[in-house]
Image (cartoon, rainbow, N blue to C red; front, side, top):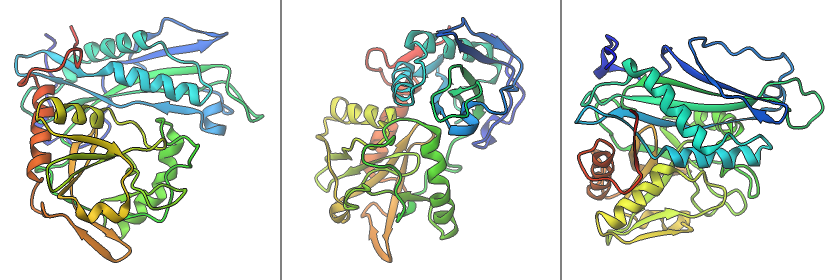
Length: 342
């Protein structure tokens, strides 16, 4: 075992900290090279690189952490590999092979073992694979050369001092077009969400609820997380839409609800008009797993959930405890969910 870095693990924020090693592979003349682990954290590209001119880039986010028995593990990296391949195809970028993706992620985590937070600290190692067009592009077209990189950084819990229920607002902005890129993890989706999120924060809200842009009657997602709702009779409902990013955390929670907690699960269109009838609401994603929502404000009209503003609702708490229990090795995981880095 590599000796751990001397960090105040329990008090890490959610931010970037430069670690020792990263992975870099280049695509040139129609093929990916082997890739290397390097200490150089600087990216050198042409001033006219495709990514700088036309935002040709996509990324992923996953976590590595230490289980109770001291292993370093990752949660479902194969799903990130597959989603990144989907993103690349949609953006006319070469797919980084899925098996190589998993190998590279494991290599980077292993090379930065000293930065993986110890068990029980509440912190994790955040893993960020990303890809971008690197050669000069001036006419609007895909780049010919690409760089695929993976960086890691230790992060604290997304919510300090436990997850207090959030107040969010129904946004007047659109996150994604009906046949656009809402379903992939493209940097440009996030660029579009920056103005709405700054606006929401300035108005005192934690997040935006985006509606479908075609009819503006259906719930989609927030800027960085998928919605889950719990009905008054204990059913899990999650919005179905082609313009939502398919969250790996959400799909895992749906499986856990059904197979571990015996709940009924429905993925269907969810209308804004029915949100007031749900008992609990949560936002799910890699960073926070589940963040409870206490209140949604729709142009001055308040929708308050019975679970309240004090703590997670009971069902969402159960889902959270079960999924994090699986991730930390306290509860037996479904086949293939936990990848051990050794």
